[in-house]
Figure 1: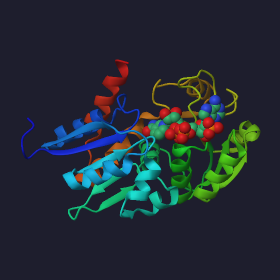
Figure 2: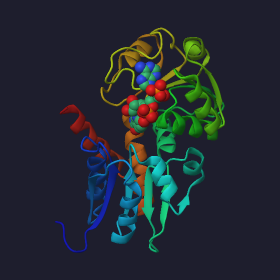
Figure 3: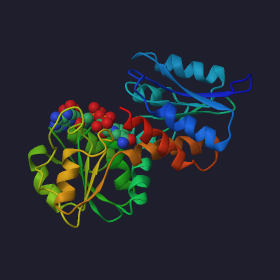
Length: 275
Ligand code: NAP
């Protein structure tokens, strides 16, 4: 029951009404027996700084940050982790007891944890990342940090170059992606191809036996490319694990305790099955 001592955390974004973060976090708080609640705040573009000032003034536990506020949040935070500073993007703000705001990016580590949970390690591996947006950058930087040799390919050459420079990795032309995929140990789709729009980001036969194909898309649970890669003998990982693990890392930052992964996963699986 919500009382005068209930603590509040939340997510800021726009749009945010479709967000699965409240389900993930509230499932975690329930399982941990915390008198906490997590809500979604629809904050329009340009208002992130005001929202973060309010979070400090109100003594919120912290905020998750999603589109379009990640860069503004990085500018407003008083301290940034090395990862958030490199990416110029924050998805996790922790409000300190002194009211100072600590910014972190848990997407990259969430990605690595989800791969490890599926039995894969990128250390020493050749990794191809498709796309140059926020998720691609987080994944590329995390894989490079974990000892992988990373190449970013994106349909806009300038975007690929800037992403690669930001993450300290290589970039390649979009047209070269099928050949690069065939030579990679791990291929990551960080484009929305296969979600809202149908199709595959690679030729369906570009990834096969002895390789890992990771799609960051979690709805649908299986994309057309995941089906094709699995049929060709590749090991396939969907985006749900990353979604759960990036939130689990936020729970850990805020509570100082291990996140209860299974209740979090169950909550989000139920919601996605109903969509
Ligand atoms: P974003 O910042 O908008 O970046 C999307 C990237 O994909 C851009 O490089 C974009 O290129 C490219 N792209 C878009 N449509 C394309 C197409 N038809 N062909 C080739 N490239 C295309 O998005 P994001 O936040 O990085 O998210 C990317 C994907 O990852 C989404 O599917 C999202 O749902 C997923 N994601 C999953 C998680 C998770 O936890 N599982 C977390 C974050 C994101 P342009 O710049 O040229 O448009």
